Image (tube, rainbow over the protein chains, first blue to last red):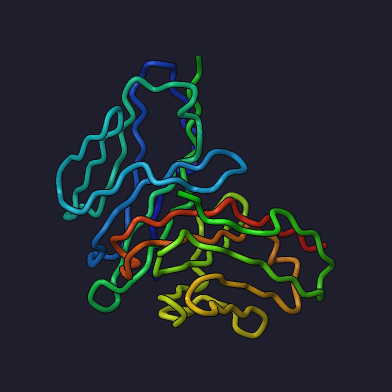
Length: 114
Length: 116
């Protein structure tokens, strides 16, 4: 059973702080890693993707990947109340060449307090 | 650029009834996905189409769910007969390329189904 694990939260941080969201995955063959943000009652939207070990930064967001530990994280710097949402970790698993699909975690609910 | 369109946005039915959902992907996108998202969980892939062919339907409950993508564009997902546990949001997504692993998937607004 291929799994993606996230703490469901809620994770509460004060405005301006760093929010740290974590995700572990079970399949060592996983090739791609995504963070989606989902506001309540809305559909998921992609905020970051990462494919190689290390850090990837995009504005206030930094994704970190450690394939040896099967761990991916998302840091949100200078958190804003508008960042309050559920963050979904998705892992891409290929079953033939580049053919495959995403497995999503249950998501971590983030609340940023003004 | 128009996003992924879905209809209806909400549907309430009795158990054992049938229901159909419609999805229009972003123009030119080759791959279309249907996901089921139960409250408090992440999306679960039901079926993946490339153009009008099925590439993965391993998690589709085929005794009650069916889907088609005619002419490689629009798609419909049908449930017949519905069960209480089918209550969920059904999300349609599309991607430009043919890799379900690396391509960015763009999600539609979803259809919230309630089965009574």
